[in-house]
Length: 461
Figure 1 (tube, rainbow, N blue to C red):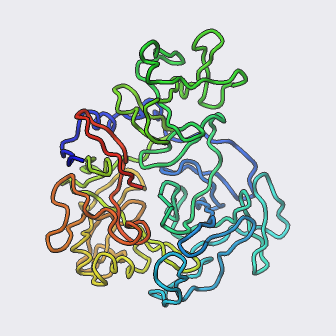
Figure 2 (tube, rainbow, N blue to C red; figure 1 turned 90 degrees about the horizontal axis):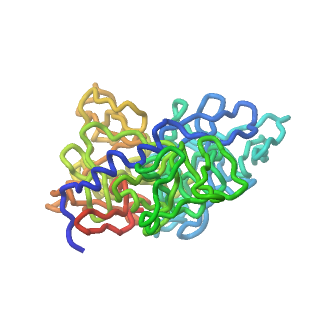
C-alpha cells in the first residue's frame, strides 16, 4: 500500500464540512417514552443521545459480563457482582500476568460500589416496564433494567455527563466495561441508532448505513434511472405509519419510501462494511444522524493516515487517546487523571514519569481556551504525577481533554516518533494493541476512499 499523501482531498473536506448536515439539522434525538421508576429520568447527552439518569441527573450504567482472556467478569442478568470489598490484587482474567499481584495505590483505591453507586430501590418498590428489582448480597434492593443491575458513576458531576463509560468504544479487548443505558431511539423497526465519533448514526437494523441526497426534495425522491444502480431506496411496508420525525411518501404507485426529517432514505450498494461511510464520498450524499457529535476544538485538524481519518492538533500531529482498564475483579477504569498512573507509566516510560511525558507529550491547550461543549475541554495536569492540578501547581500544564481524559501526541524515543502528518507510529502502543493499557490514534473514520483512488481499509477499532 502506498503511503497516503498528507494533503486532504476535496472529498474528505466535503465529508467533514457537510456530511450529514441535512439529517442532523437539529440537536437532540427523539426517543420512545416508557414507564420508569420514581426518580429516574431521561436527560440528553452530547455523545450518547438520551440516557437514563437518577434523581440528580447522573447517567445510569450497566456492567454486562464479558468474556476475557482467562475467564469472565461483569454482572450477569438478575445478579450484581459489584461489591463493597476493596480489591487488593489483580485477577489474572485479562492479562498474561498471573493473578495475585498487588494493585497500585491501594491506600486510595475505592470499592466497586464506591466508584459505581448502585441505584437502590425502596423496600416497597414495584417493577415497572423493563425495570425490575434484584436483591443485593447485603440485603438491599437494587433497580435493574432489562435484568441488568444499574449504577451511577462518581466521575459524572452534572446532568449530561457520561464520563463513566461510552457505547462507542471498542470493547473486544478493553475488558468488562460499563455502558450508559437509555431509552430506545424513536425509529421504525427497520432501523437502529449507534454511537460513533461523528454522532448518533442511523443504520438499518442489520447495521448497514443509510443516506440522504441533496438532489431530493422534501418527501420526494429524484433518484431515478442510473442513480438507482448505486442507491437502493429504503422502502416502507404497507402498514408503516409516520413515527416522530419519520414519514413515508409514495415513490411510485403503491410503493412507499421512508424519509427522515422529510429527506428520502437510501442504502449505498457499494458500502464495504456495516456502519460504513463510503456513500458519503459521493458528492451530495450524506450519512444520516439523529444528532452530530460536538465540534473539535478550534485549530484541530482532520488528516488521512493508513488507519483512516484521524484527529490532529494544530500542527497536524496525530492525537492519541489512552485506554486503561485494570485487571481486578471489579474491572475499574484507569484511564482518567484521578486513577493510578502506574499503568500508563509502565507502557510509555517503563515506569519513568519523566520519560513517559517525553514519549507521549500532552497536547497543550491555550490558557482560557473554550470549546462550547463538555466533551472536549481543558484541565491542568501535574506532569510529575499525571494527576489533575490547578493553575497554581508548580510546573502544571494546561492540556486538551476528551471526555475529561488528557490527549497526547507521539514524540517517541530514540528518534522513533511521529514526524509527518500521516504518521501514526504510536497507534497500538501498549497491551492488546493499545486497547487494554495503551494508546490509540483518535480515529474519526476508519475506511475511506479519495479522488486519487487510494484507499484505507485497515480497521482502527
